[in-house]
Every structure is written in structure tokens, then in C-alpha cells.
Length: 402
Image 1 (cartoon, rainbow, N blue to C red):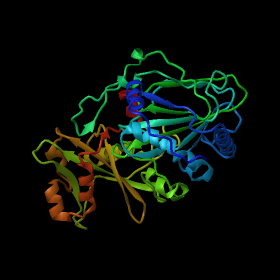
Image 2 (cartoon, rainbow, N blue to C red):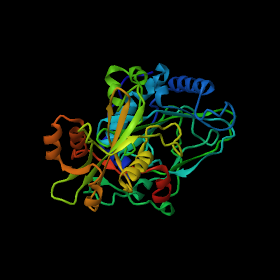
Image 3 (cartoon, rainbow, N blue to C red):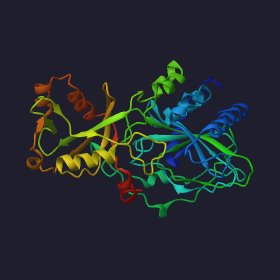
């Protein structure tokens, strides 16, 4: 695949992207490159695709995603210089690959209706600053099925309080959508799309497969509220040394536990809720053994918000309406995925019992040492240059936002 870097986007192209919500780079791949990659994706689908119940060529949408990036023939498109240059130019930041996705629609598939892909409950869709990098491997025309976008529709989603530590968005009104347009994408073109742009994919009429790459990249300072998709070492090694920076988290252990940093902001100095084990004298955050959210998530694994909400309700009697990913901490047994929640209206006395207590950052450092994992978690949570959004569980998001 071609590795020659194209010139950076012009200021006008970047301005147009932020105004319209999308940007087109024609001929990012040659016709030969697009055809070769299309054959690879088709072979991958025939071998195995998501969902596993589908058997090619039954009419449906087939997905090759995530750690399938480990296939060397698939990896090159994720780090393609033209793609990365365009993505990072519009993000205004270095990028992380939050989702590696190839979609193949067989003839007879019904397509997809109008929607946007900002989703609070999914690792691939819950960052506050991410983009699609869409590369058709067949023409996206009336025969194969076009990919339509609603210009300026990303402007329907507005941050409620830009000065808040954790950002929240209003609910966009789909009735205000502008008419959808057809960017007339050809095989090998690159379409970079803002996360809040509404789009749809009507069915085609051809007897051939419709195929394309639909990767997602977030800014490095805007982690997904639901947590990153966990890539494995094989996927990381498939990338060149210079492009390994695109992988945000990588481990070959399962996410076994999940914990919540609860911050009280009602006092001049924030306090954090920790549990003290009288027998071991250890301090730890609320939480415990978590489990994967399955409904409406599919191949996109890593979210633990729903399980952590249930755990904190049991442990503390506290309903946590949202939380935002902080970090992953590795242990011998597996990975501990840590989220954060802050509130200025918590009942401090009610929560400070049964071994739980509120501690300031200075008190934490004094009792645990500045290098303790919990102290580092607090530092990460309070980083002023990180843009965080509110992550929610699947059952919440359907009723509260989407």
C-alpha cells in the first residue's frame, strides 16, 4: 500500500470540515489498492465475521473489527499516512485508533437508517472529540448503495457547560436535520466525518458486495467515556514502529475488576471516597468484579459502566447516573478498569460508614504515599487538559440521550 505522505490539509479544508462536519479527500487509495483491500475484507468475512450467526453470502451487514487488525494485510489502512494526516489535522491533536472496522453488505441487505454515532455507552463512540475515517472499497453509488450525510448536523449537539470538568451535551433534535446529500464517494476516496454528523446508508441494487473501511480515531486528550477498546499485543505488533502510538491501550489479560473514583466537590478541596479494610489496613476504591455490557454493544467490548453502577448501588446505596473512564491498571490476575464520578450534592455522612471515609488528595498522599496507584488515579482524573464526557450504561442511553 502506498506510504508517500500527501501534503497537509489546507486551512480552508479544515475550516470547511468544522463548518460542514465532513471532508472529502479524493483518491486517497489507488484503484488497485482499494480492490486488493476489498478482496482481503471479503476473504475475512467468508472466514469469520460479526455477528457469528451470519453465514456469507446471506443478505446482511458483516463486520470485521477490533483485533482483526492483527492481520498484516488489514493493518496498513489503519496507519495510512494520508488518513492519519487528515484525521489529526481536523482533530487538532495526535490521534488514537479507537475502532478498526470493515463493513461488508451483501446484495439484499436493507441498509441503515439515519443516525449519528456518538454513543455514550460504547468505547468507540463516547469520546468528546473523534472522527470517522471512511474509505469505500467499492463505489458508494446508487448501485452499491450510497453513504449519505446531513451537512452541519453536528452543530445540533451542543456542550451544555463548556467550563464543566466533565462535559455534557444537549439532546439533538432530528427534526432540524438538513436534507441529506450524496458525497458521490468512489472506491479509494477518504471521507472524514465528525462524530455528531447524521448519516444513512440506503440499500443498493447491485449483485456485488458493498465494502468499506469505517475506522474511528479520537484525540489523545479526549478518552472515550466508556473506556477504550482493548487491543491485544498481536494487533499492536501489526503496526509499524512509528504507528504503534495509534493504539491507546494494549493488554493480553481480561478486564476482571472495575472501580469508581467518587469525588465530592462541595468543599473547597475535593474529597474522595475510599474503603478501609480493617484486617489488611488497605485502602481501595468502591467496586469489584465487573462484567461486560452486551446489549447494543456487539463487537465493541470494554464498557463496564452498567456493572459498576450495580456494584456501587449494592455497596453504597448510591445511584451513579454517569461515569467517565480514567485508566486501566494491570495486576497479576487481570486488568482493573477505573472510572470517575464527581458531584457537589452527595450525602457525605450517609456514605462515610461501614469502613468508607472521605479523604482529600493530600490525606491520600500522606496515608498511601504519592506513588500509590490511587494517588496516580486522582492525578489523572484531575488533569486539566483532558476532555471528558459522561458515559452511561446501554439501558440509560436509549432513554436519556439517543
